[in-house]
Structures are given as C-alpha cells and as structure tokens.
Length: 184
Image (cartoon, rainbow, N blue to C red; front, side):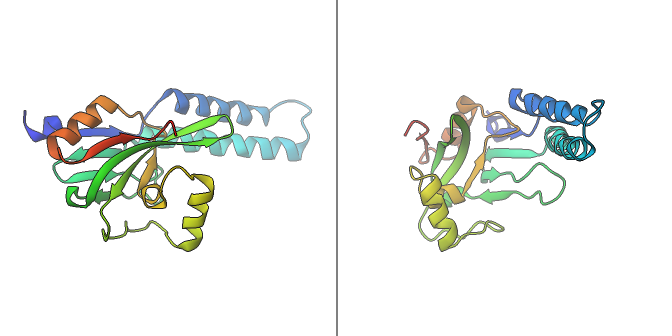
C-alpha cells in the first residue's frame, strides 16, 4: 500500500452536530422576525442566531484539514473559520502517543484528540501556554495532563474514524500508541 493511501485525513464538514447547531442558529435568527417581538430582543436573538448560523455553516463548508496522519507526523488543524486558520505539524520523532479524551461540561461531552509529546519538544506555535493556562487546564480537565491538553484539538465540525486513525498510526509510527482515556 503506498503511503498516500495509508494516510488518514479528516476535514471539517457537515456532521450531525454541525447540522443541529446550524438549524438552532437558523431558528434563533428566525425569531428576530416574529411579529410583536420587542426590538431589543429581536435584534439580540437574531444576531446571536446569525452568528451561530454563519459560524457553523462556514466552518462546515470550509473543508479545511482538521487532522492528518501521514509519514510526516500528525497535522492538527486550527479553526475552520477564514480568520486565524493554521495547522500544526508534529513530527513522529516528538510523539509518544496519540490520546483520545473527553471534556465533560455538565451533561455534555466534547471529544478531543491530543498528542503526548516527548519531554523537550518545541512548543506548538501560536498555542498560548503558561502557569495560568496550566492551572486552568488542571482545574477544568483534571484527568488529562496540561501538556496533552495543550497539544489537542476538539473533534467538532468533523468526524473521527478511529479505525483509520489507528491504521495510519500503525503504518507510519508503529512505536506510537493510540490511547483512549475518554472514560476516566
């Protein structure tokens, strides 16, 4: 199998969550046009809905790379929105494991994919990190080390195919484990 076929790439696009959030944004935007609605409420609810509608639909339509696993390492995509999109490519020589984890916010869950990197690996560019952020990570996500959180991306506006991820990691870096700590 050639390496391009073994590579795993996930792109931002339409998922069940993206469709749901777009529809919710559309519903809020539609509330702005209800007859007899107070002007301030109509404008604020409509603006909120429009921002949600645009954010989720533009993100889904972008088709930008969310994650790529290939011979070069792991590419972590940034925001799918037009402003501020950039990727971070982490070479295999810096990676100990690929970590799947979940952040719990009330009854809601947000899945993440992160990287446990070797001690002394260069900081990911553009990712703020410091003592305040480390304390925030330790408080909000105590089951995941701040170093992994720092090198993580939410699985949001795209779908993760775990079997393809594991196959690509095994092909390009058999020494790297895929670890799932979602249930901790």
